[in-house]
Structure formats: structure tokens, C-alpha cells
Length: 222
Image (tube, rainbow, N blue to C red; front, side, top):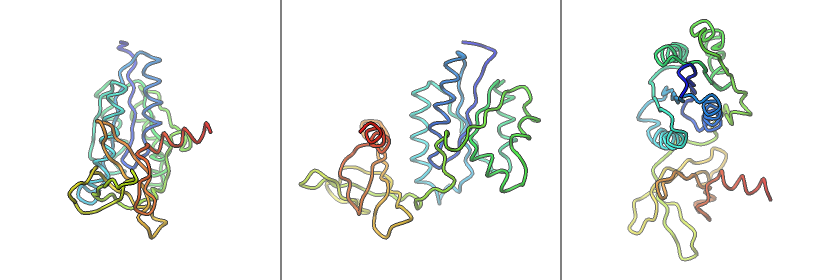
């Protein structure tokens, strides 16, 4: 493994790190370098407990897949550059990958540029800013905060969403209700066979335990 190259991918909670991490993993493989995933935690613990639980399971799976080191740092957005610079120096990083989402948040809050700050604070590393559309990042997360919920299989082989722990419940997980509906429609995140799945919920019912990402792939090839 190269001692000269070291890759740091910076992500934050909110379902927007998969492509950034994949991009970093590809670069790490190309350069035969270690990969570190740095997760920013700027959300209140109690209010976003369920959201964090789902995201961290997802981040751990990606870290295991790409044999990466996973770090979580509590910080506010205005401290992001300090955290990145500190970790970059500590790990002797040569390549830093961030998403345009982080850059736009920094500019919106402070009127400055995280790119400029990082170039000054970590001149020893190359900086990659991945555009939002290529990082699969959305500025608006269109779901309510996650709540604990359960799926109960019915006679038709579909699953009914419940918020009480009933006898015979099949799966326990986190339900994210879509903001644009009065019905219980959205995403249900669950663990099945040690794998995190996010399945579609339509009006309180899950027709199939097919991961949403797999559904999109099928649609693209149909």
C-alpha cells in the first residue's frame, strides 16, 4: 500500500454520501491508498436519533465494503474546515473529497468558500469538490424525521405499517414519512440478513422488500 497517497471522503448525515464514498473508494483503489470516511455530526442527538441510526448503519456497510476507516466527528457547519484540516494533517491525507452540498451550506451560512479555506489550511492535499448531481446529494430532504415503526406481513404476502410493537410483527425499523402526503407514504429502513434496506411505503403498505436503489436500477434497464 502506498505511503504517499491517503484519501479522505467527507460526508454528513442526510442520505447523501453513497456516491461520494464510492468515488473516494475508486480513487483509493486506483492509487492503492488507504481510505477514510469522515462523517460530520451536526444534528441534535435526541431529535435525529432514528435518522442517525439508519445513516450510520449505511455508512458502516460502505466502510466494510471498501475496507475503509470510519470516523465520526461532532461539529457545527462553521467548524467543518477546522475538522477537515485537523484530520487531514493527522492522517497525512493527500486527497480530500467533499460534495458541493457542503460547499453551498458553508457559503449560505458564512458567505465564504470552504474550498478557499481548505486550500489555505491543507495545501498539502488535492481537493475534489463533487457536483451535487454527481454526488447524489439533494439540498432538501423531503421526509419527516424518522420514527420507530414495524411491518406485519399479511395473508397476501405484503406488509402493513404499524407504530405499535404488536405480536407477530415481522420487521422493526425506521419510517420516514414523505412531506408531500397526508398518508403514511415514504421510506421504511430495516435490517434484513445483516443488510440495510430502504423500501417504499405506499399508504401504509409495503408491497415488496426490494431496496429502492435496486428498483431504480431495474427501471433504468426496463
